[in-house]
Image 1 (tube, rainbow, N blue to C red):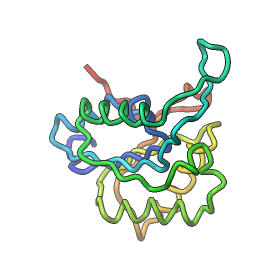
Image 2: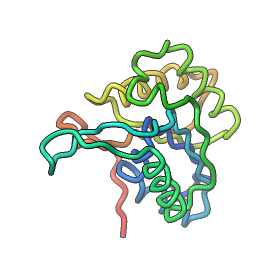
Image 3: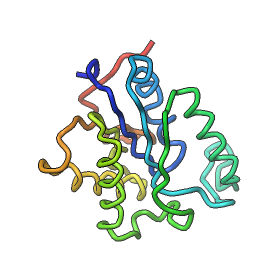
Length: 169
């Protein structure tokens, strides 16, 4: 199934989702010659707070540092291009955006990239992942996108039940 993939689009609610959720698969597809593009749904604010397990609470992060880390990961994984859909005001707020706006942004990128494989975050307890997953359900309607779709998981969801497992070396 994946041996014939030539163009990949990764939907990323946040800039670390690709590396955490499907980085190994992206690198494997890139190594077999596929062109990989990512759609980052929201830029990272200049500073933001994020839960940090080892700190047992919230810690502050630099948005510029997070974006540099994402760019470095993209280079390692072989990502050919990134489109940013929305500004930092939507970071961790994609669920508050009108669904039609999110759907339009994803549909526009699918139309430009013309992927034969889309990697989408699994529906999860993270509100942004859930919003992007649900928006892509509308984009998958048969008269618009007919390629392959695989969901990836980033947060060790208890109810995520993969039906495709790709061996990585």
